Length: 493
Image 1 (cartoon, rainbow, N blue to C red):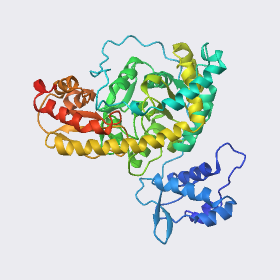
Image 2 (cartoon, rainbow, N blue to C red):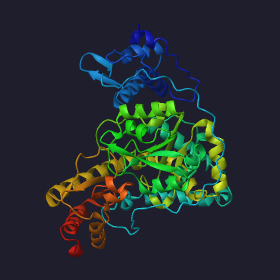
Image 3 (cartoon, helix red, strand yellow):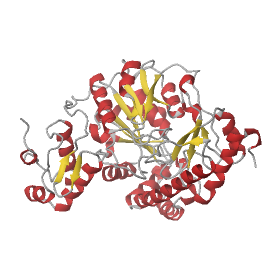
Image 4 (cartoon, rainbow, N blue to C red):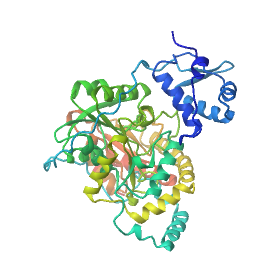
């Protein structure tokens, strides 16, 4: 018989000398109890007042911890009754993951791959281009001030060969940011600064897989991420994505021997779905059973416009089998060429060695400026501002699609996060030819069919970015896109 929540909570021992904040310890305790089945669905948890008194902590600490557990879907509030373990959780009798297996020996250099395929990509700025943040609202004033301050110090280290893992101050700032904003507990030593997401994918793949080994990859998915895995010598196995995220059961069937999976659970690219908690747990179960690894691509996870946030895979797993990949290309600007990889502890040395051997360090000066930008709270403030801006731009895009492109494009379920949405063509047509015509008219929406690895699975449509287009220009851009769909040869203004 399972103990009641009050009895279970009595076993909670907060460590006030631990580096993890008390709030994080509370969240981790209840999350682990739910996942392990020690707290069953429908169980009432202690009130915030009672738990605060029992643990001798500030009540606000308990309230904020409970708020996070509600947001992640582990607890639900019942008016006048209190907080209860959510009833719609999947099977919770999942075993605690065993200690991470020792890393595999270093694989030999993979042979050149002549079959890498990339979707057509334009590097010219155009309205509705996916993947671009609001460059018109880049925080130039703060960035210039911090850059001048760094330059006055004349940091020789920024110009010399440096720690392949990246600037220590930046890694510490990122670790603090992830702990406070994403619920990811990690040490600065686990973070490796990368010069773009592709380098992060390459490092993770080479650290845990050898040439020819299979890797699950979302279908459709980010073509450049797929190419990075192929360049590392892996055999990429497309696994279908639906409204709940990557289909884990299909992955087990299509590539049962795979030991690596790459997913974007917060906001799948390009379809925009958010992976459900059930799918997240199923994927983590697969990793434990297969002694496999997961690359979690959190490329724009900071930007949610609605719905409840779900815990990142890294937070659910404790980072045992999950590489968490983040980038500042979407949150600030792609030209900075800065991202980060949170590495499972047993693999830190191996990844650092691979990074050093690659001799591709991220720009040193920009690292110092970004470290100060985050540490002074400027980055968090910028994210708060951008969430409001992007929510407004998404509303303008949806209104324009309804008014101008009804019967031409179907955006389906509106994504709850991110900087883009995908819309299917409502009529037969060549979305690649339409995209070329739209580009000539100054519209950078990308053809959806090019994101599929399997031609038979491809569906025509468009990946439409709204973040990088000021709201007043969105209606005109959608009108031009509609013209390219109706008559590609006459779309240019």
